[in-house]
Image (tube, rainbow, N blue to C red):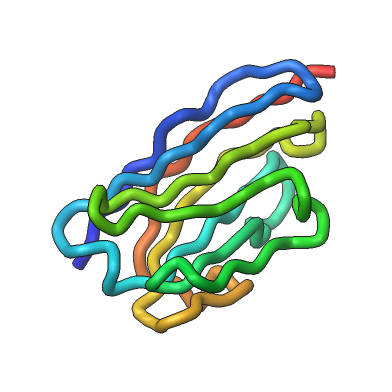
Length: 124
C-alpha cells in the first residue's frame, strides 16, 4: 500500500504558473503508474495527465496539452505537475493517484490509491 500527499496548490493569476508535488510513502513509487485528476465544484472528477512507471510515456487531456507537464522522480518517490499559462477554468482541487498497472489510464476507477487533494485557484 502507498500513501500519497499533494502539495503546491494556491492562488495564482491567469497566465501564471504553479508546480504541484505528490509525495509517496509506504511503498516505492516506481511500482505504480501515476495520474493527476481534478475536480471543480459541482463537477465530476476529470483526468488531467498520466505517466508510466518508468516515466517514458505520458498522456494528457486535450484541455491541458501544451500547458501542463507531468513528470516523476522515482528516486525521490515524487510525482510533479508543472502548470503554466493557467486559466480560470483550471480552478479545481487536484488529486494524484497511483495505479498498480504499468501505464495508468484516464478513468478514476483504474487507480488504486489517492491523495487528499490540493486546491488550485486561478483568478481572472
